[in-house]
Length: 381
Ligand code: MG
Image 1 (cartoon, helix red, strand yellow):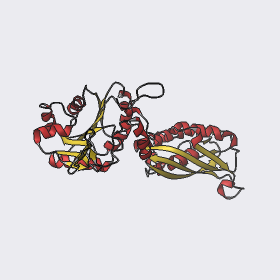
Image 2 (cartoon, rainbow, N blue to C red):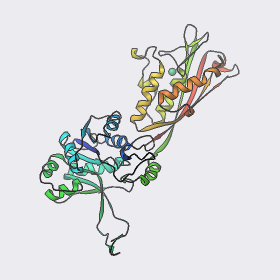
Image 3 (cartoon, rainbow, N blue to C red):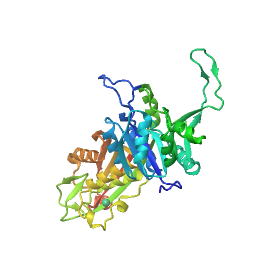
Image 4 (cartoon, rainbow, N blue to C red):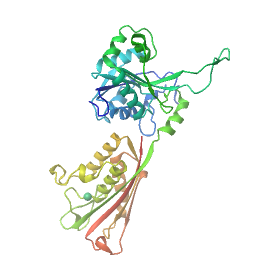
């Protein structure tokens, strides 16, 4: 059962539409709006991340062209994911999703509404748990006018329907048996059970429809910038390799530790974890665990990058300072930048590494240890 609701919840995410209003790209190929990147994540990934915290399972209804993107999005998800094919009409796709789902409540959502927030989802799900239905909606706030006559249409009591639309899944399936041609699930429910409970939607929960919408989605979808800081020191000793930033550097001394003792990579890991308040490297990879004995720390960094992605964050840039009296690190800096950039999935231009000599002062200056400090900036949806 999902932590936040009183009944089990299947999110049914619709990603089978044809995007007929999206137009074509520069080469004349039709754009599928669900495959467009919006600040690091496509709409399907964004919806999976938003619903994972509010569902016990996720069913993604795909088309041939979105299937691979759905498989990719499923990797980000902490709850079980099923991927099924959609049908000819929207309601055929929903029905396939409902039949594959297994929970008491179905939360049906258009992946094109990819800026949906946790509070919109929670309101609709809670209402469905309590009342059988809960549909996100907002009051019509603009003046409505008939195009042909120019007459103003009273907007009093009118609402714009959004998704998620959440229902008791069994009851909705029963209603589907007598459904005619409809535009959404609220209409199907209403035909059989009467009243549909409306819940708090929001202006931000718009549907990506036309190419010109992309500017809006990209501006709003950029999310929050967050910063993390990491610091690590390892003792220099004889009989060990010196590994920094995943690169082995010839030197008479090496760093001592349970892993390869790569202080640079460890500081970067901690900066990244810190940016999303995900704890520290010691908590994720305990130095008592034999699994991490002598491990190449770039592997740990790749694991941290995957954790960040699952929290809905993308790395913007990383910067680090290595404090070491010896050896001369300048010849290796670019190799280190490349290694770290590849491990976290950014370009080399997004990773800065500097080395400073401490003027023979302190333990670093006396060749007792090497210390690294790093900061990381991420954008989080
Ligand atoms: Mg360390």
